[in-house]
Length: 351
Length: 249
Image (spheres, rainbow over the protein chains, first blue to last red):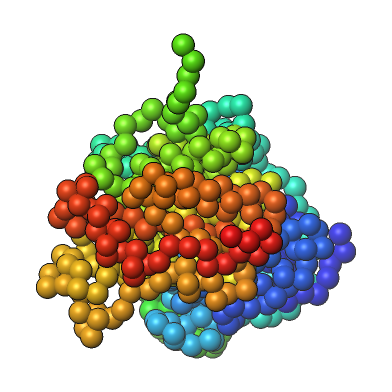
C-alpha cells in the first residue's frame, strides 16, 4: 500500500479499522478528539458502529459489553479521560476480556494542560485501577509506529485476553507523517466461542464474572492473572537500540521524548561521546532484557514527566546509582539542546 | 397426572440468597417466564448490577455479565450494538440505577437503545446494609439517615419513571409492584411488553418495580408488603408513564 500523509489521531483510527475493529465507544477530549471524529465518519462506511458516549465511564463500560460479546473494540482518550476510564479497565482486565485503549497523553495532574506530556506512565503501566493487575502498554515514537502498534494491540489483546493500552501523547496525535497500513495477524488467535456472550443457544450459558465472593476463589483468579503476566513478561518485551554497539552511556527514553533524545545522541556522538539510546517500545512488559549490560557506566533516563519510568530503569539495571534523570513536565516539550547539556553533565562535561 | 405449574426453564436450580419477603425472587421468575414464553431464553443476555442482584447471573439460566456499579446500561449498549438480534436486559436496583448510574440510564434511554431495563426500587441500599438510597422516602430511616430522611438535609427522592418519561428516546415506561397476585400479573404483562418492544426493534423499554426490603426496613415480610402499599406506592404511583407502541393502556 502506498504511503499517505495522515494526522496521528486519524491514522490510529484507520489502523483499528484495518485490523478488523468495527466498534468504537468514546468521548471528546483534547488532544485526541480527531480519533472519535474520524471514526464517527469512517466506521459506518465499513458496517461498523460508532457511539459517542455520555462520559468516559460510560464509554469504557460500553467497551466492556462489546468485548464480552466477542467484538474487536476500541476506545481512546487523553489523560484526565483515561483516569475516568480506569474503573472499566479494571473490570475488563478482571473479566479476561480483550480491548484496545489509546491514551494521547497531556500534562497533568487534574485537568492539567492540553499540551503533550508523559506523566501517565504510573497510571497506565503500574495500573490505575484497583487490584493486582497489569495491562500491556505499547509506546509509539512516530505516527507509523502508532499505526503498527494499534494493529498489534488487537492481536495481543485477543491472544492474551487482556486490555492493551497505546500510551502515546498529543504530539504524535496531532502531527502528520506519511504512513502505510499493512495488517496481517502476527499470532495464531484463539476462537472466542467458548466464552463470548452470544446467547446460549442449544449450549451452556456463558457468564462474564467480576465478583468472587469467596476469598479463595478471588486469590486463585489473581494467581491465574499473574501466570498470564509471567507469560507476557517472558515473550513480549520489545525495544529499539540506537548507537548502542560501543556505548558507554545509554539514554533511556520512550515515545515523543525518545525522538528528541535521538537527535541529542547524534549531536553528542559528533562531539565524541560514546552514548546511545535504549527506547522501550513495550512499557509493560518493561524490556528488562535490554539492560543486561556490564559496559554501561550510567543510564540517562529522559522523560516528559518527573521521572516515572526511572524506577523501572533502576530495577532493570539493578543499580540505583547508575541511573540519572532529566525531564520536563506539565506540557513542556523537551529540546534536543537541553538533553545534550544533561548528557554532558552526566558524562563529565565538554570534550 | 397433568402438570399445572412448573418452574421456568429460564431459571437455574441454584438456591437464591435473597431474604424472605424480598421481591427479587418474584421478579426473577417473571423475567424468566417472559423470556421462555417468547422463546428467547436461548437468545437473551442479562446485565446484572452491583447490589443484591449481583449474583443474578447464577440464577438466570441464560447468558449474563456482572457490570460495574450503575454502568449496566452502558455495558448493555456495547453488547446490543455488537449483535442487535440479541435480547439484552439490564436488571438494576435503586442505588445502582438512580444514584451512581443516573447518567448511564438517562443517556441509554435518550439514545433509545433497544434494550430492556428492569428497575427494582425498594428505597434502600440492601446489599451494603441499609444506607439511604436516592429513592428513600422522606422520613424513612436508613443507616446513613438514622433519624429519617430529612429532605432539607439529604434532599428529595427521585421518581425515575416520571423523569425518563420526559425524554423522547424511550418507547415504553411502566411502574408496577408485586405485593398482590393482581400486581404480579400486571408486572408480568409490563415486563413482557417491554421485552416485545425490544424484540420488535421499537426501542427502549423500562419497567420499575416498587419493591420491598424487609431486612433493612426492619419489618417482617408481610409488614414490608403492607409498607409498600401504604407508603411506597403513594409516593411512586403505579401506571404507564409512556407508551409509543400505539397499543394504549
